[in-house]
Length: 210
DNA sequence: CTACCGATTGACT
DNA sequence: GTCAATCGGTAGA
Image (cartoon, rainbow, N blue to C red):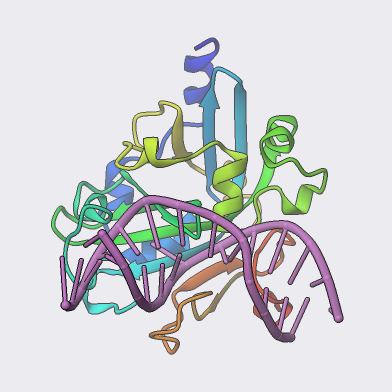
């Protein structure tokens, strides 16, 4: 792919060690990072503005809370790999955290489109920038992420990865917490993290307040 | 094999 | 705000 080295130099993938930590810390620190998608069609980059943590067997909302199945096997695998699953006929992307055998992951719920907006428009078939990647399944459609990427290594800078936030030092982030969206169980746990100043966050207005 | 259901979205009142 | 389309995964007969 043309320009591959230049892109991974400018948008260097986060290291495996980043993901090998407490998932709540990983979730919080993923807000502001860059989600990068590089295909033959072009480069797309978005700023992660909203995530949710799913905490292994002790979390009833986690897909792996009742053990390993064919669908959730990637969550039990190596940290820094993707867990991609389907819900209501749409794909959603997670980053796996913690050591092998501990099935925790971070759901990427929304990105602010930064580069490759034209390509995202084509894939999403909408002209509204705010709707391109606001929601976990919308961002997968905008970035052409499907079952192919279940188990994908997000640390080697090929096709799909997460890179550092170049603005991190310049601008402090306002990160808010709430209950997770769309899950009925464990509503007391505040495991959703989002940039409270971003207009690219999903959910009801009350869940976006500063 | 069948039945049920969901970490969603888009259309609509 | 409400609601249902839609289909793969899962559990159970």
